[in-house]
Image (cartoon, rainbow, N blue to C red; front, side, top):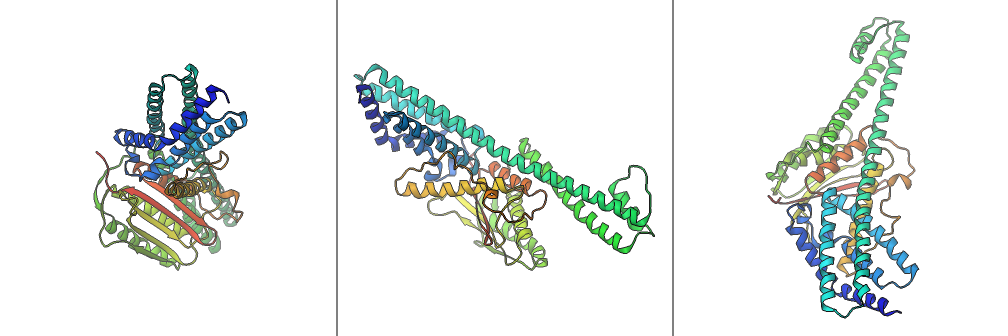
Length: 437
């Protein structure tokens, strides 16, 4: 081992000893940054997430003296950086916040390197230059991999939206085909460009149309018009969220009153399907929040759960997040349905499930003093690749899940998801109890 390599290895060992101090300085910088509000309510382990892994990647690259070791360290840093981007997306960070917090990390590491150089003035001249070069490359990779992961997740969302719209077009084609059949049965030749409603009215009032044809067309018309109306509303809502036209309006609210009222409001829908809706939370639970948007999030998840559950029902629970997460509260929607699979929303759901699994691994490892590393190929696990059951979903499901995710981002909320085949799906949303000014 050359003197140069030995000195870099010594620096790596020093940084490993100083890792907790660097993390502490970074955490303080993040919490003091007025443009980094999303992480303010996160517990320590969730804020740190894959940052310790990135620092350990730096230490490994400094200490590596063989090409194979360098290559392994580079693969790990790409995987860890992409996992960080996935985790931050799940936690409700926006892209600007992700790049800004990594900028704060860069500042803290640079300060540590400069302090080391001052304290070791007899170092070989090229040692610190090499260390700064390695860190600059790693930091650049961290930012590019994290932002790239964000863009990939946006592509997953967009892919689901395209499939939803394709389903809507197929529904229109089906309705047009049924309309044509009705006219053939009625031997009624309408000409001109009439609206769907005009055509339906004429067909349903035609004396020559059979009762079966009228009934079939009426059911088809009602089902598709309602579905397309909901889809149009969802597309409009998503466009407003994506365009930054939605803003949160925070005020003190009783989450228990809001959620119980919401559950009572959908009980009739559930009973029609032979299902129950149960609610579980404290009698009163006062927090800061945007009541309208929280209601939209839970209502979307609740109605979707009812729609796809065949037996049993849906449970909505809420309350304080826990001892190690005292600044947040949770609301959970758990169903006994078939499990989330296939269809337009599956890629987005797969990303949420992967992020949830990784977050739990990070928390478990952090509690035992270990550092979590993520393979570059295992960042997102789409559900559709491991679940081959037939798809039974309605147009708009992918868009609906996107709306929930966007609303969570607007509210600095983390959304977690667990799904098991033939056991059900659980969505858990973690929201700040208070918001900074």
